[in-house]
Length: 62
Image (cartoon, rainbow, N blue to C red):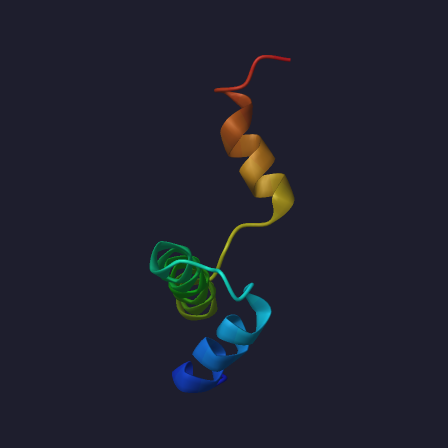
C-alpha cells in the first residue's frame, strides 16, 4: 500500500488550488473508508455480485 503521506500529497496535487479544508477532509475521509473496506474484504472475504443480488432480491421489487 502507498504510505499515507504519499496519498495525501497525491490528493493535494489533484485538488484545485482553491480547495477548502472541508474539501480536503472529505476526500481524506473517503480515502480512509475505501481503504478500510478493501482491507476488510482482504481479511474477511466478500460477496460476489450474484450473492448480493440474491440477498437483496427479497427487499427489491421487480
